[in-house]
Amino acid sequence: MQHIKTIEGRLDAKGLRIALAAGRFNDFIVDKLVGGAVDYLLRHGMQKENLTIYKVPGAFELPVLVKRLAQKKDLDGIVCLGAVIRGATPHFDYVAAEATKGIAQTSLETGMPVGFGILTTDNLEQAIERAGSKAGNKGVEAAAAVLELIRVLEQVD
Image (cartoon, rainbow, N blue to C red; front, top):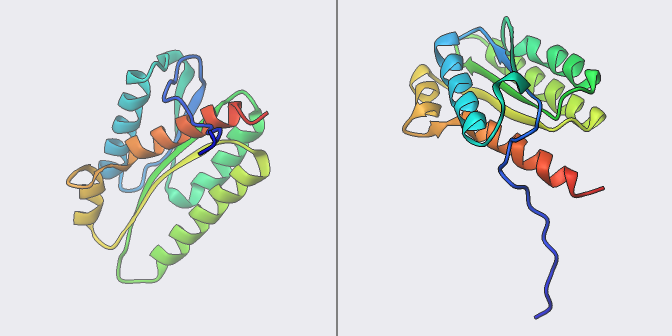
């Protein structure tokens, strides 16, 4: 069988400039996501001075922050973190959909690598599981995804 060239991203944050964009709503969950992402990036070579945490009221406000950060052109990637927990009204559906759509649209329009770590859960227990207990920490996963994407995109040009 012939050798097929494969491009993969190194999980090395050295020299990168990354922003964490975090919603404050449900901060008892989001703080665990932020902590996981920061720890992951630092353990993979990121210098503290190249990492900035931006906080906005909630997940709905994240897209405008992500767009502004992406337009600045002084970042290599953005990790989005938040928690939208379903309640008794359709509010959950609107917030989750608009946050997701806005962040994805900005990433596609600007080419900015974005890690998506916004939890969208049916209840508090599911959110807790995804913020560092049974289901791991989705903040770590979002940081790893953005790091790998940055390193893959470096090899595309």
